[in-house]
Image (cartoon, rainbow, N blue to C red):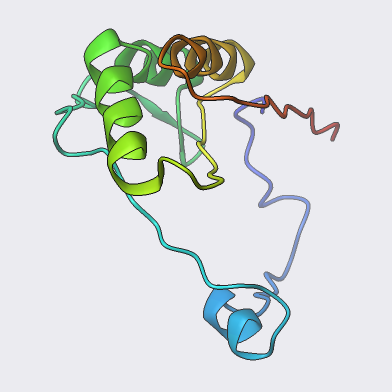
Length: 118
């Protein structure tokens, strides 16, 4: 993400099917979604928005804190202890930090990362 908008490259925005439409059609399974917030009280007031998205460095500083991660792990343990789950991270280093925290709490994990080349 370079922070540059894409408005000069595209004329139209095509919106695909909604998730629930794909579940109803049998292409996806339903999901239970839980969030650890607002218990962690993440303060995003100092996180700038660039080109419609949060500044990754500042967002990582706000999210990659022990109280936030602890709340996330406790929420996972409460609602999904023996189930598979997905946790989204700000960037690769944040993802690795989350994995270490889950491992320390006795939760097995896998880290999936990718890079989009534009």
